Image 1 (cartoon, rainbow, N blue to C red):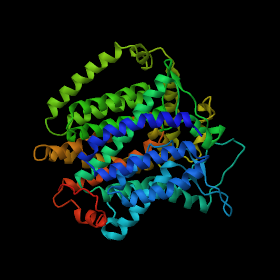
Image 2: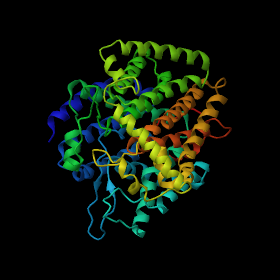
Image 3: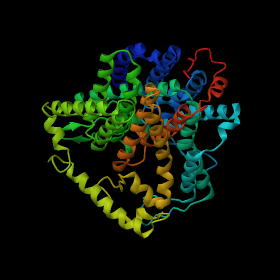
Image 4: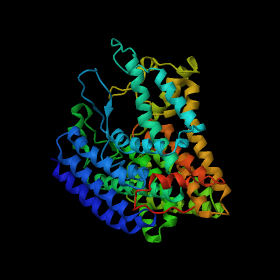
Length: 518
């Protein structure tokens, strides 16, 4: 048992849930909030007290299935629990087969929450199965991933061949990890209230993570590190990463870079949610909380992504010019306040080409990676090179891995420019849906316009942040969710687009649901 860590995590979470209870009814059913809170607490207690991941799975699986069936918004339910524990991949034990696949918290949530929701949607109305442009592009990218087998980064003397079972495994995992997130989000969130509820649920989850991150930095104590070590073993033991003499927190996200990205997206969501929260003081506190936790991650990519998200939001929607000027002014004042604070010198030291504290090595590595990647991409420009990792051994780091910290370069190396086109096209279309909808409704429906501006800003911020990260963990989950929410938002801004009859049928047996606004 990890009783000390559990006590701290519960002590952090209870006050946040207490204050959130006053705000949550503005965009969700009170019984849904209470149920999500209780399940979050139950899963947290189980994670810290049960001996291994499989005992946790036996406890969590039935609870998640029950919660998703009784919740009026499975996407909001998913997002409220997305960050409850770290994603620690554990191999499923088998008898007949050599191996099945790795299971972690994200896949457990997909299997127990999203797959049943997708099955119910499919049964209720077959029209949800009609494939649109984004569906076709996503499935096209999944087909490319299925057909091409990327040789893993192994010893030169070790060879791994593809097989039919590996092909089936890759296809199944793409559907589970990617397409089901998009499918449920795009087909289920057919009202403004449902999208807002999903965003609000995620903001609450991010607030829990943000306070935990601030605690970890100030106390120099990673609360989830021993849990990760116990579930994954010594080989996956997390490092206490330092930068500018500060501990970079992780909370339950798996790393400071993932934490920074997830907080940046939460900030983008909150820019809309705060418009329906009646307390100005509460709204400002949440923004300061997200910005403070984002700052202590010392992750420069998410810093840039958060700034781009805020300015993009300000530039879209109603009263764009005054909002943009106000955002620039607030950002300038906040920057001055940060740099004259005790943390100012440390933050300055991690800014590339300005600071002198340590990150120059990572900047140099990224420059080498980009140059080497471009050389290899030119050799196989269309469909990539599935043996490319064996040609990049000169980029192996001290940890023994080749860290492809640029998602676009990684996808292009593996699958070529054709694969890259299939990868980025869905989220670009989702952005266009949000952008055009926000502009179209800027004068006729300011609230709906702000919702579109928030989604568009989060997508642009994500596209920027993918330049400096690998496509793992929370990055991938939120990428596909944003694709789905952008697709569903289009229904709200086109004539006769809202699919309220489907939603009514989906929840006809739920007495706790909150009727959506047209």
